[in-house]
Length: 199
Image (cartoon, rainbow, N blue to C red):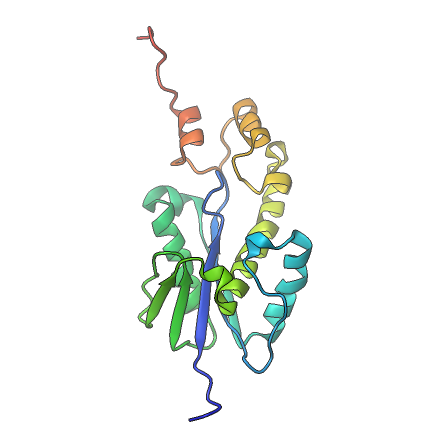
């Protein structure tokens, strides 16, 4: 049995916190015989480091996939369920079926494959680190495309996260088609609460 590699798939997401755009997830099966130096939690890497590692992961991994849950799915199901949906899609899109799925966080998507959730897994398991990098770089690229379509909101700078500049743009220009209506800052713009003394 020596020398046989158990096919472990790492899974992570990017984009749970933003007010706009889809949530992304990636699934990666690394090749133990072709390791990649420098893998780490994508949040602890610079954009330059992530952009250098992402093509190496795609080139050297035995299999990888990126998938999304769209804004309407986030609003319909809630962000946790939409994230699990994106993760499930990524795992099922792999060209090789893994024998085990290791997921960053507290919850696992339903894939029919033995799965384990690992808190801070993106800094403990190389395959999850690789997935976090692919999920983050793919989503950032998509937000750059959305910036071209909706330049008033500054997606290229904040990637949809609730920065002061993004909130100011929302107040000035209103809610776009790619904003998450179930998220409080967006919802409150669409359905402002009556002020004391009104009504």
